[in-house]
Length: 260
Length: 368
Image 1 (tube, rainbow over the protein chains, first blue to last red):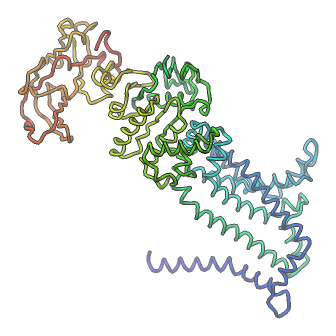
Image 2 (cartoon, chains in turn purple, red):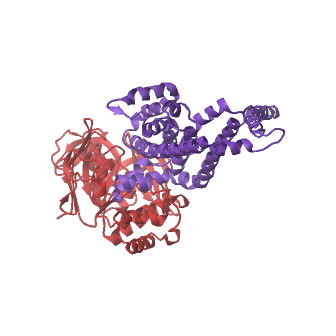
Image 3 (cartoon, chains in turn blue, green):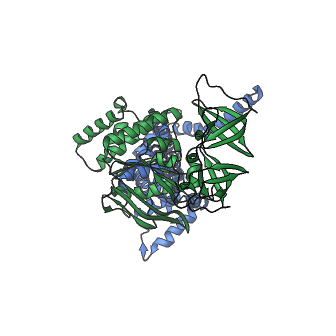
């Protein structure tokens, strides 16, 4: 590459980093100024000791975990079956998985409320509806991650090999398919975790305790604590990303090289 | 009672018949190859035995028990795939023991069987490696051990050597055959490679366009092909249009050049009938060595060195024939353009109906 090209590459990269990190740095510095003229973690202590945080933060973690479990149980068999039995409809399924990007969350949540607030399916107050809603929102990340993982292995031949050795569908799914797309499932799971932790609309309109509405509430009533909560949220998401990288890096050799 | 029987098997996909009226009986411990070009239905037939496809009509029985509609996991049929299909998340030992674990066999038996299989394929030192740490040949040997660990009633091999390089292919096919003989297991081997089929099989089923063209030993299939397709597909063949002159005397003519064939080959033919005449390259030789029934004037057109064999292209009338002769360091080869007499016995001249190579598949009645 020419010297001029290298300089411009660095210029745009540094500009991008500044654009992303400056507001974050400002937020972090602001979050440390809860005590006048002193940098302290007082705002963080306030957030962690807040009963509302203690209720809503674990609640969001619970919704995330339930969402991930539901998504794995629905999307892994679906992606597997589509690849194995009906590969022709893959483009259609991929399009469906993108719908959460197209339909605004507010439209989606009103659809859920209208549909499930009247008989025969009066479940609008059930936490199950929130988890189901989150599962749909996680679909683009989860399904596509799993589908990418399945692409790295010869699904049909591995299935037939397992069948010829006496395996039924359950064994094939849990002992052949799941272990071979584990990294992809983890990637999708952590992305889904991050999405659910930061999701505001569904929890707010379905009136369930969650972390994102808590931050919104803090913004209305406090000065430094919303900044602290935002940094906590970022730290959590980055930790998830870091775990994806570590696990992905460790397992990539085995999974990818072993596939066909 | 035969070990494996395929009776009147047909398979259709959306109105297209890919296997038609397939009948075969296989003895216990026999090694049978399905040989044919791509799309001839050999893999589909194998997959019907495995249970991955269900026949449209017909029945499949193993040891007298019908398994036609049984799912693949209830057939006790081992399968080896071209793409190895080892489970990437499992070690070599875990791959081999997978089927036994599914059967919930005792851990001691599993360990014993895995060790036995590892010894059989000489990969004891690789037991704890993952498939990606092995070469292609080693992976295929593990796949073989995995399929055999379950003690299947039938072993199916779907072009298992196609992805390997030439040297490993030759050594592994011998190894597969030796292990199959040692274990006395019935095996079906699918290949489009005639040399592979000829070298490894007890019998060969030659298929074309979903139909069985010929079933026979490698010797029969090569030396006495029953159809024009088999003659052309198995081995190299000189083939030319000709006309029957005198069926009783076994005489025919090609471009005005007279050929003598055996009377058996001409049974049921009539004078003036257009036929296809075929001669294997190795059945032709220079007449200077020994004159046989047919002595033909020819011109040397090309000489190709193939290692153990030298292929000499000669022109007889307007037709080019290949003639194969064994190589030796003192072989005296003619010059290109030289006129030489070539010769062959009357038994070397095979006769088939029709005037086109692939269209004409029906052999004359009572032929060889």
